[in-house]
Length: 221
Ligand code: GLN
Image 1 (cartoon, protein in one colour):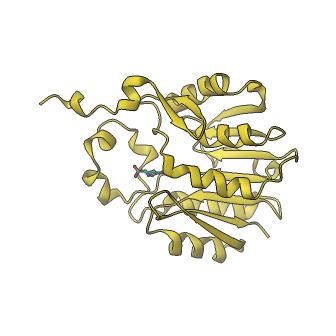
Image 2 (cartoon, protein in one colour):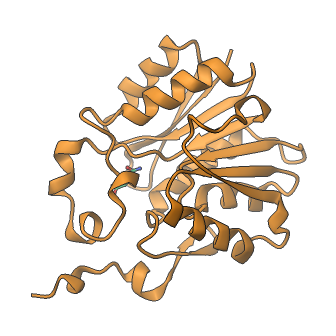
Image 3 (spheres, helix red, strand yellow):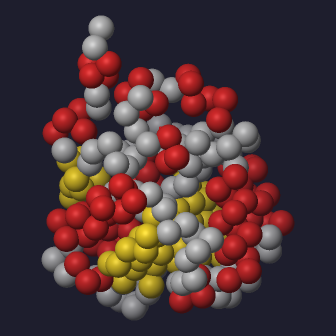
C-alpha cells in the first residue's frame, strides 16, 4: 500500500474553501477545517462593522482565520504570526491570493514570544496546536502523516500553547482587547479556567458544525 494513498485531497487540489473564499493549501501548514468557521464568527461578534480594528492571528498557518476576518471587516488590518518558515511562505502567498488590498495583512516570522505587537491589538485570535501528544499516534493517516505536527501537538495535556498565549496576553494585551481561541472538543472547562485565573472576563463559547465546543473568547481586564 502506498503512503500517498492517504494524501489529503486538499494537498492534491492545492486549495481549500473556507466560508466564501479559498486559500492555497499544501503540506506546509494545517488544512483549514470548516469547524474553525465558528472561531471566526465568535471573533466577528466582538468586532463592530465599521471600526479600524487591528487583529493578530497567532500561529496563522495558511492565514485562513485572519483572512476571513479581514474579508468580513473591510476596515480591519492585521498580522499573522508564524514560527514555521514553511507555513509563513503559504500565509504570504494567501495574503496576495485572497485580499484585493494585500497590505491590510502583514506577516511576522517568529514565535509568539518573540513578537512584540500585543498591546496594539484589539483582537488576538489563535487556533494553536491542542491535541495531547499521546493522542497524535491515533489520528488518521491523512492528518498525522501529511499535516505539520507542530500545528497539532499541544504537549502532554494539550494545553501548552494556551498557557503560553494567555500568560503573555495577560501581561501585554491592552485592557478591553479580545482573545479568541479555537479549542479541542473537551477543553472548554480547562481553557476557561486558564483565562479566568489570568484575569480575563466575559467568557463566551461557540460550537462547531458537529455541536462540539470549539471556540472561546474573553476580554482582557
Ligand atoms: N482540529 C484539528 C484536528 O483535529 C486540530 C487543530 C489543532 O490542533 N489546532 O486535526
